Length: 427
Image 1 (cartoon, one colour):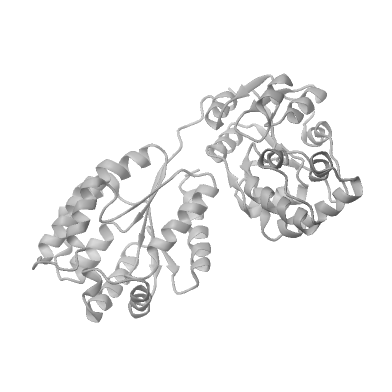
Image 2: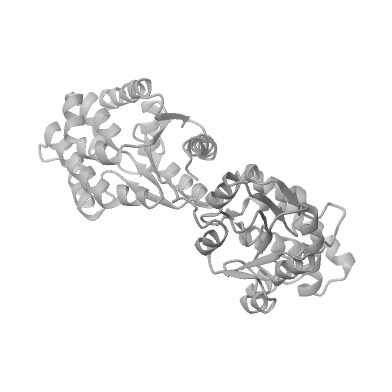
């Protein structure tokens, strides 16, 4: 049984970490007005209260000047700044767990309502909410208690969750409980002095208070595959950043490598001079590195509720050592059976690109390793092999057009991966 039937959250500093966008947009507005940027401690105080109020309180502006500063702030915030934000860890599964248990969940924030809705929708949180309250475009100021009243239902045990003394006071003014979170932007001394009903030091503690029986966060193993030069490393880094921004805990890794023993094997298999290494030896070395990698890194991370992003996995062995070098696919699968048994991927992002274009891009970036020096016919076979795997694994493979600009590749890859994570209940 939940301790509260109605849970109302603040946004900035409670559900999301918006300080990067707020700092940059504040700096932009003040520069446009020819005013100096306040120190870091003062800028942190902009997180939470309405903008106009902060400009007047911390920059000494009149109400008219504050209105002008707010307009300038939004001039950058509307196209760019609102996305310079990130969801705090565990917030997404907490909201999902509350909704699944029948709670009424809402947001009451000093940020303009339309902007708040855009943020919540962009980060995939809006579906968990019953209502959102924030100042309208015509309101320079908005009292927290009034915002809470706008979303507060007529009955039910209710609580306001926020990171500032204003959130605690607003809850008190409307006669409901409050939870002060200490991981946000408010000053701890001030919010504790306001007398909250409960305190949560971090999001884990907040989950324990609001939903004591919340299930463990589900992990997921995602691999990136494609021909040499298709941009896997670039996209792994970009997806790592984007997933973290959306509140996921990510473990980025690679093959061969990812742990000390596997990294030593990597030096051998990718050395420019192969010393006469046979295809069988190469395949066995990859399988040995992979077995250690699964045991030391991949399996523990997935069990801990993390998303593992791995640059290459068994599919690469099937392509490069199997189909391209002519080794038996069943034998490749057999020597990798430990990795398949304990660490089979949940999803594979296949960065789809012609081998010639991909290799031209690769050679323009740096010197090729031993495998990349194998020649055009070899790489043509790897491209054909990946296309065959796509046909054989339509449920696991997620094709992405890797011939686009890196930014567009990231957008497509993330949109498809985020949809897959939601399908699998990975929150």
